[in-house]
Each structure stands twice: as structure tokens, then as C-alpha cells.
Picture 1 (cartoon, rainbow, N blue to C red):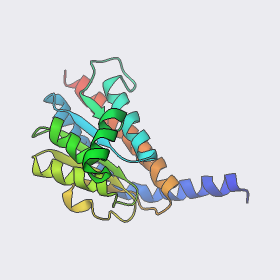
Picture 2: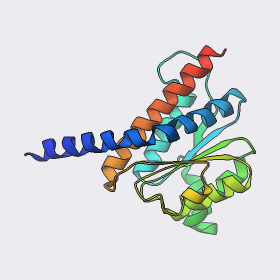
Picture 3: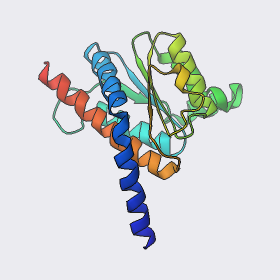
Picture 4: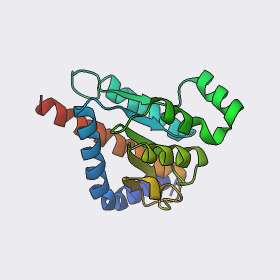
Length: 189
């Protein structure tokens, strides 16, 4: 079997196991729909490839996913290099997201943190702050939800340990959530 076939087989196997998190995806979609219908913000964050996922999903909600509609209030805390480097330099990298959540988050907003290990210190710190502020908290992680699960209203734990396969499921689930939010809000308006 070639590496192409092996990776596609791995992806297929993880996708099959990911059906087990459908209830968590449904819970997350309800939280997001409720928040956006009340004009609450959805704030995304993560590191590396997960930062790219955060930016991607914020763009889908702020722009559009599949249907022409009004923008939804969504942003990624990974895009402002001046903010990231100022906070990282002055307070430490472990609080680069938590400090931003404190600055822009409000009760009823939604914080969505991505960490394939479930233990990224800066993601866990931001989720803890968000929870304390009365935000709804959704976590995207791998098989081991690590330290983030206790701070999550919903933790979507992809049943896999390989980072690439986890991230593939994260973006698929993120797209499903965007589609549900978009469809629900268009139907209800």
C-alpha cells in the first residue's frame, strides 16, 4: 500500500469513529446558533494548524459559508501580530489568548478553542477565563481531551491521536457547524 492509500485509509477510519461525537456537534451547533441569533460574538483560537482552522472558521461566519446572508459576529484571536507579540512579550505566551478574551469577551459570547492535545497552555488558560466570564465554551481536541475538558460546555474530542487526522476532522466539523448556523439563522429570519 502506498503512503497515499495509507493516509486515505487512516482518514476514512478516523471519519468512521468520528460519528461517535455527533451529539457533541449537535450541542455545539445549538450554542452557536443561540449566540449568533442574539448577536453575541464567536471567538476562535488555537496554535499552528489550529490557528489556521480558527481563522478559516471565523472567515466562514463573518463572510459567508454557502448562502448569501448578513455577516455573523466572529473573529479569530490569532491574526493580530502586534497584539500577540505585545501580550507574549509583556505577559507571556501562555496568556496570549486569555488576555484577549478578557478584553473583548462578554457574557453569552462563545469561545471556541482548538488544541489537538487538549493541553495547549494558552488555549486552556483562555477557556478557563471564558468560562469564568460567563461565556459559552466549546473545545475541539483529539482523543485525549487533556486539561481543556473541565472548562468546556461542550468538548468535541475526535477519536484519534495523529495530529493531521485530528485537524482534518476539526475542519470538517467546523464546516458542518457553519452550515448548521447559516441554515438555521436564514430559516428563522
